[in-house]
Image 1 (cartoon, rainbow, N blue to C red):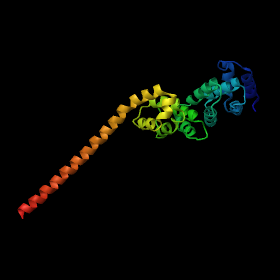
Image 2 (cartoon, rainbow, N blue to C red):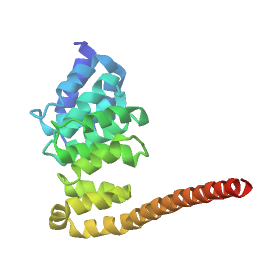
Image 3 (cartoon, rainbow, N blue to C red):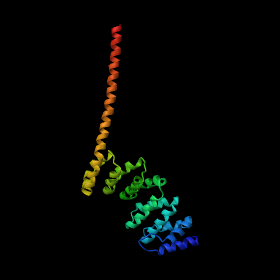
Image 4 (cartoon, rainbow, N blue to C red):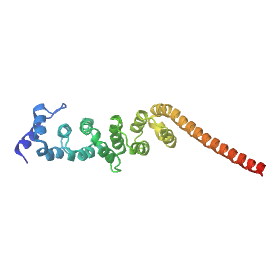
Length: 228
């Protein structure tokens, strides 16, 4: 390994504490870039001390190397026990911006990860204003397995579809988050009713056109008969 990168990594290891990595160490790691990358990824290992995982995530969020994104997602969705690590890794992932959304959702689609972690990944994309056909399907699939995170996403992204999801898993949501379930239902019920109203209106238009066409055909047939 590059000796300069190694020196800064050793300083990272020594920088125990709750705050961010000292600016001089952070600047040095960013300057080293690819040379520091293998060592930073090693420090995401959950067996490493908490401060090393957290500081490594902070540095990776600044470097934003393409090859670090998937390891960051893996570390995040594997649910580290310390919330400070989760926050640091989440911030690093969000730093990649909209270009990372497809990769984030690919990670959220992996069944090997915990449902709450997968839904939180989806939430990163939703909060950033991202759109993808997989989002609603993932929420519908995972919300019953991680009710609180799922309901919070439903609340942020109201859909008529959520009424059916809540109905099918009412007992799960009622036991864990009854108040939040009620909020989501109140938000989404009008959308479901509006959807049904739109479908009825469209159906009525189709039927009226069919009736008008049938009347026109009958009129033509009658005219032919009269002319004969």
